Length: 373
Image (cartoon, rainbow, N blue to C red; front, side):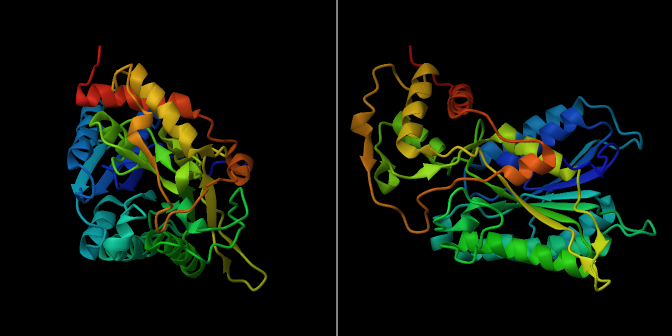
């Protein structure tokens, strides 16, 4: 197991996508666990999905921060900035003003199907925006003489980079040269760009390939949330690939646990035989390592929605489901090989699907004020 080489206490952390599902949960966890931390959150609050959920997440972060003591410097532990990753001047200003020690780039235009009809959003956020983060890290990377602040860049990649790879489980050693969506192509591009910057400028960077993240206050565009909305409205849900899809569903708390551990170990800087830097660069999968059949998934979801009284006890589920063909850009299976994460950080996601969907169903019932008798 790796030894942590970054102490987060008293440090400033930049989290992009802080109003997002993973970002907001990460900020909560940092406030909970790390003493005297300062978190700078950036988010553009796009309307890709319901912005009310994003503002609700930010409201919760504000309330938590307001109950935390001021830092030893007298600063508040929380600063939120509404802005776009593609705004190069803004990104440079944030780095100049706050001098983050660890940068966690979670901001991105997400979604496979949306990328088919709205490609511009992916180029702006996922490529131009990520380039701006890399450039800012280059200018602020911490060097041996003590100058600079950035000790580690951690960024979100995606299981989508594996495309239609036939070999399972997916390993970070596998070739991922055949993306089947623009979203996947941008995420693979992020990994390539980070590798180049790590090599050229000795910037320690770690990419995390997330596998189907779910949980309370999650993204409404994800299947489990969309299914719930439609079932509640009496509409029919479409189950793709005739129910033969398998997904490695990963509960949000497991994702955050993995991110926090990874943040605390930057890939080591070292020189190769040629005297030039070996890129301080790593990529890990974070997935449940236990793919679930989509039909089994929706059955458990239905049961937990009934238990949480989101749906009535006599709900006719069979009358509200339709088995359909695969959608463009989708893949039939996602399955994470997490052995590298286990070896290096002693951690493997383990939350059961039923436990995770129960937490979601109970949150949904509370958030939308639903309760069938």
